[in-house]
Image (cartoon, rainbow, N blue to C red):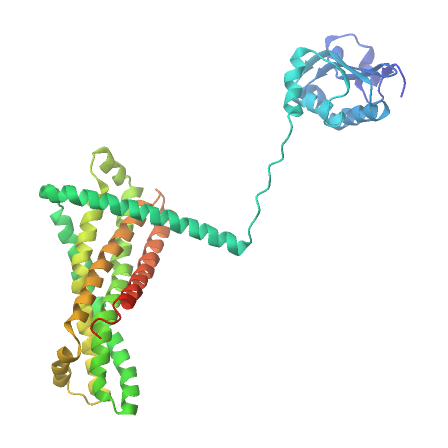
Length: 390
């Protein structure tokens, strides 16, 4: 490398070097003006350097490797932008030379490269299983907080409605009782009868082997009135009516009807949530009683077929072997199940985003969550009242 003149890869060795026009002066140049002095001149911009970044970067790196304490003079630069500054910075090895002459306006361009690049600490990644579990737990906690908030708002609005009965949506409550109660009777009757028939058929075969035929009444009466009837009715209603409630409120979100209610100052809980919770808390105990009756009817038919048990004897002995507390316990659970299913359906309906994909996901989550919580609450009741009426 010569002590004076341009680097071999600079623009001064081109044939147009002799032209003394403005365009030649604007060409980016890297000149050795002394044994340990480099002068940078011309326009070091994105347009002037296009296609030649690697060329100039290698020239600068070679100059730095040859004389690390060389003087770099940038005062002859015509124009300098971020592309030119980055080319110089990378050629210097991403650090300023020890001897540097530049203009004040150059400081701002190079300052962005001089800032210490604090590499962010990479978060400790969990395994795929733990990561999915943590996300599911976080989502569950968020849903729990939102449900508690919705319950609190519902109780506050219930107090307002009790002080002002004119705010109660009687027509909405009546319509929901009809949709969730009367319209659910056929499917619950069919399912209840078949489940009672199957259950009694399996139990009868076992009791017949031990000569304990008469105990079919005790087992069916206790299991159906206390556990299976309310639980089966709640599961069917959660899948049928709970999903419909979520879809109804979700469609109102998609069509911006909920926003319209908010603009008019109408509370969502008073207009939508409260009528559904009250209606389902009324209708589900009646549906559970209807389902239990059909299950006992199916069990009675199977007992008459397998054990030759007279239906009148079945009906006569049933009140004496099943205490009334079991019936009341089933009713209390049904009321709680109804309010819980409606509350969850409204919660997921209000969380729907204004798109159809979110609507489908919310309906699925509503049904799955409602059925799961119904089974969990039923298990809690079974443990707490294990000695009542047995």
